[in-house]
Image (cartoon, rainbow, N blue to C red; front, side, top):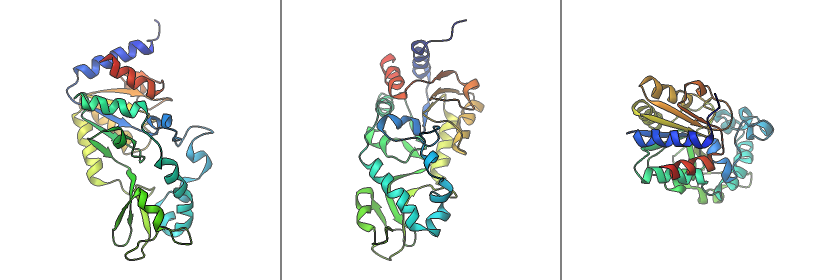
Length: 252
């Protein structure tokens, strides 16, 4: 039997979306790669190939050596700050606008789903959109953070001189309770979950497709590289999500 073509898989996926009453998207770093943002784990290219996350991206590292933390994160702010949504981000926003997508759950911190126009967005790993003082809780928008750095390269609160941290979830921190509970609720009630640009390896988010499957829903996977759910996927596409998602919109 011949393997299904990309076009036939897109048509099948369009049929699933059309017939679904509750569709949810779960996105990872792969949807932002076309926007010029490197992912984390691609051999030879991923961010963690060059930097040990346990040395710079943990909450302990932030408190132990705040300057080294910001030496890593400050260039990332510059990298992410001028990026624009990919065709994949815009396609998901259009699906929501047309009433075909209930929500987007994302592992990404880059704000691109919001920039694309997605309204029902659950950012389970936080966002670089704001940074907050770890002592008094004062918050600053992304474009204000540059003014907070002291001569040592540490972002410092203007009110209490406490240390300022991006509002992203670092290794060693708990996910925002409200966000992960909302993500689980969406997964458990979804007829269809679109898993886009994620290797589905980082828990607890990686367990969300299982909740959909256990509740009788279906899972479609659109990502490059294997995932633990490939065998259970109703549709499996490994093309460029910036091409596949617009093709899906066009097929609806």
